[in-house]
Length: 366
Image (cartoon, rainbow, N blue to C red):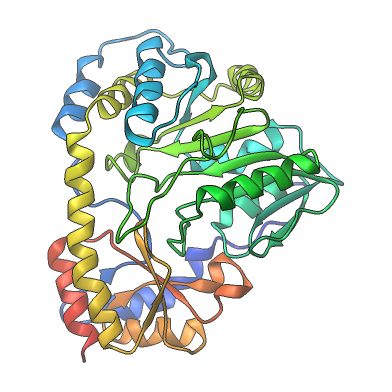
């Protein structure tokens, strides 16, 4: 017997629709260059690997809240790296990566049928999926647009996935004020905060230049990009102490617990800034190869001032561009994955080895 899921229909998993183009790209004589997914390819930092193995022999259950040392390291890193002050260690909650948190946050906050979840006009697909799982309505907000009455959760994302756009402190401040005006919680996805390029200056929604208090405001963080820990599933949520306390209680009941060795690895990653700088330099070098190659091939690269992606367009339907790239053995993600406004863009990731990025740059000229 096959059990069928009850509840609202979910969209097809976007990357499944790339299968035919992936097959074509893999036939290239030089092999595929997969720039479609932002998955790290560089080694896990040695200091993190050592920390993981140091607590391999811990047979007891870990705590949902994380060790005190882990939470203290997160608070210290937020201050040292991003200038965030006033965080309570009690208001820090480790999560099993950031995607599961994004997908389940509306449900955990009590959002449900009749409620609205507001997402950016071009947005990470899991914001919408999380709203649908909760049975809520999704609205896409254009720049500066106010969330409608009935909105219970507003997602912000700076630096943006997929566009790499950075919101200023003033823009974040206005967005928080608009959300508070309709009684909505703000959740700011800040997974790319450690990866600014050019003159970009990303700022956390929890920075003093944005908010005077953390009331109704949450920030979501991940170590996947800055510390190459996607395989560890290492994320955090922090901000409003009351909201975090509620999430903690629900996650205790649901068994949403980060494994103890991963908690120790996260602590080590948060206490070491050197590997973050080294990883940023790797991505910067790849960007400096790939961006001019795209522009020389007739692409326009928009925003992309931070993060791991080049938001690129040839002024045609995104799927035509995907096909053009696949003919050259390069795989990217169509902008349609991120909303209707992405219909003429593709998202090209910097997450490939130096050799593969160089190969992509060469093929773009053919």
